[in-house]
Image 1 (tube, rainbow, N blue to C red):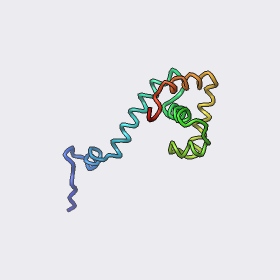
Image 2 (tube, helix red, strand yellow):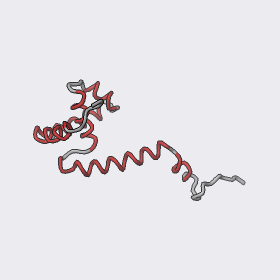
Image 3 (cartoon, rainbow, N blue to C red):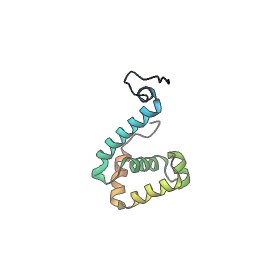
Image 4 (tube, helix red, strand yellow):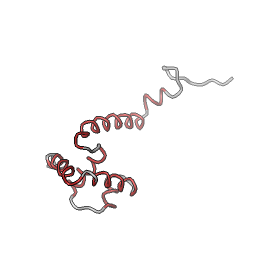
Length: 108
């Protein structure tokens, strides 16, 4: 007879779910991303695109490869993000960069 240690909730994965830092961090990330996506929707962008624009604002001129390394994105993901952001047109990018410009720079 095989005995299986069960968590207090009665499900084998519940203990991992309750105590795994990675699982919790990913859940929190999804919740925060959804909140930012909703707040940024009127500007026609999502949280990922906003992050990209803020990085470009903070770092200044930067190559695509360096931007990808700084933001931990592979080339194809970064290309899709940049294409979607470029579709916003100059007015959309300017509006978001105006918001990003109001953010405090690191070390300020």
